[in-house]
Amino acid sequence: MTVRVTLISPAASAGLREARFGSDTALTDSGRRAAEGAAGLLPGAEQVFAGPSRRCAQTAAALGLASVAGPGPADLDTGGWRGRTLDDLAAADPAALAGWLADPAAAPHGGESVLGLVARVGAWLEARSGRVLAVVEPAVVRAAVVHALALPPQAFWRLDVEPLTLTRLTGGGGRWNLSCGERLTRRPAD
Image 1 (spheres, helix red, strand yellow):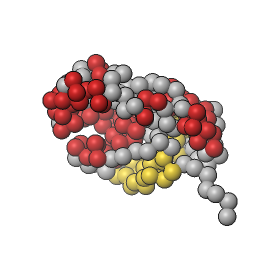
Image 2 (tube, rainbow, N blue to C red):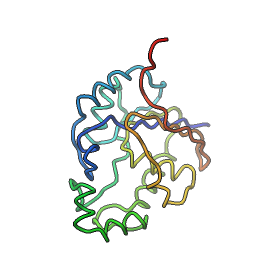
Image 3 (cartoon, rainbow, N blue to C red):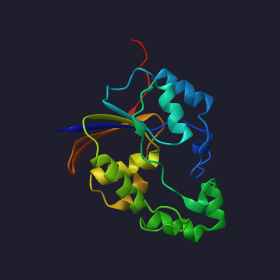
């Protein structure tokens, strides 16, 4: 049976704009309005999930996804770096940051490695069936794509996931097709 998984990256939040690790900040007003404006544009699904972050929950609510089946995969656990900005880490410990970005098995922050995230998200993805919709953090979307396409884990940092975009994975059982980057916005009337 073909599985259709649509991953939705959440709307903008202050933590995203600040490039803050593990930030669980609320949506910005413009992010909330953008999500509300996209309500009704999503494909139908038998199962709906939202990541455990406030940003994912608020995006799901703004999109009108009231019947969430359960939590989707959580964001990358950045351990001791949680709450710090990328600029702060680059100044305070550039070697640790560079090592983490270069080595998918590294976890100098004491949290989860990229390899760990890809394995965790891959297991979640392979356990899905039917039509699935999930509002999840950008790192989860990147991990799902790396797993689904059997990309080298170093590709994780080369995938950009913009707020309120759809990434569709179709297939299952280790063979997936990808459609990515569709913006979740209303098109202007012609």
